[in-house]
Image 1 (cartoon, one colour):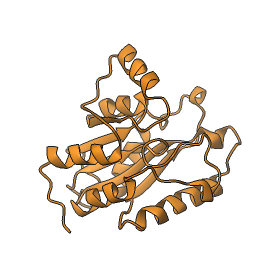
Image 2 (cartoon, helix red, strand yellow):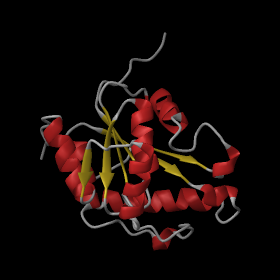
Image 3 (cartoon, helix red, strand yellow):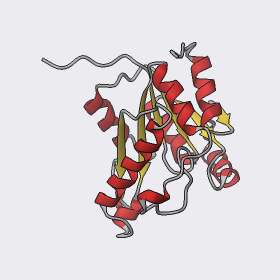
Image 4 (cartoon, one colour):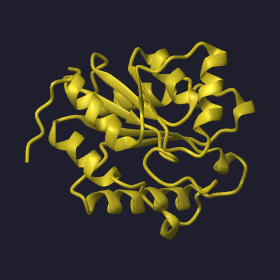
Length: 194
């Protein structure tokens, strides 16, 4: 017998430039820095009953710039920092491949989301993708989710140009993750438990 699917809404989040400061290839757990307001914003999503899942391209592994054990330590540190605000992640999924590998898991392909949906028994009905890159908006379109583009990444104007060139239009453009979460909670008429 197959386990029931969780009907809670889900937010798929990019990592670098969305949750944490993007220093390039993040290969030191002590260098993890959450962007302002991220912890409390994530905690609001959690308290409103949303599932929160990170989906991130990490080609530094494929390039030999970071080992998977170090990436795991970086993610553990990110979880610790989020926990300080009472927030948590239901899952973290990453693609270690190079763009030229043409794998099925590198965003904007749906492989990471498909894996998360299967392993975490997530519903497909109410999903959002938040990210600072055109690939995040493309991922949202590929999985039938609402797309929220955040301006907190390093090159928002370049990313907007990339979206325009590809005919991608996000459902909402947010200043940062806090603004993105506010929009999602309003859209879902969510009640945040204190």
